[in-house]
Image (spheres, helix red, strand yellow):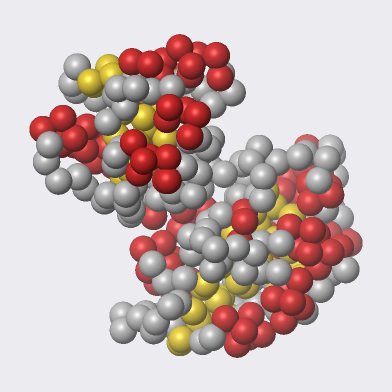
Length: 311
């Protein structure tokens, strides 16, 4: 049996799914439990990393570590240099969460446009009719949606948006021959779109790609959706754009710091719909992810080529 540490919390259903993975002894370590992590790392052979940073100190504390497997796509939370120095491969799981993330991106668009959280909160407080809140509610159909990036998630999202009557524009490093929308530069997309949805990884090139200048280029009354990485957006500049009502709203699943500072003014703005980095979190994602992650555990012990190796 291979000793695996799943570095994330697990409810009863997820714990049962982990227990059912064959040939692996998977220990669940909640991200906040540093003491348990330090007890598990000396015997850990494979780390299933989710979101809390995998640091050089963690890697050093795991002398038997043979593989760092990202349960997800982005590896910006892993100290890749420390892994390289130890000769420990790092793999990710592109595509396993694409459907889940695409669905939440669509959900955030609809929830922001239709002000669902505000209506829900009002109804629970006994408010049936609120003329001020009802003013100006729109529809998704007929709007121009700008997709920043055109990988697996936008490819799933674009047909749904088109079926709902949206016009699609997109930007990427290169035009995509199979894209449903029209290619634009980022600046042109920002100026043209009623909704801008982010779908690129966080790198040096994309760090705060949506800064104050980019937000100013967006159409008055536009909406920003971010299910990718919080670092893509200059968060204080976003707060300013929302407070000034230059932007009509934002739907956010990711934040500059995670967990965020809950005193951040972002969380008191009524035109923000927020979820706690759960776009990827579905049973379908876990089933697809664990199958590939388990195969990589087998391969690393057999000295075979790994799937989706990053380092």
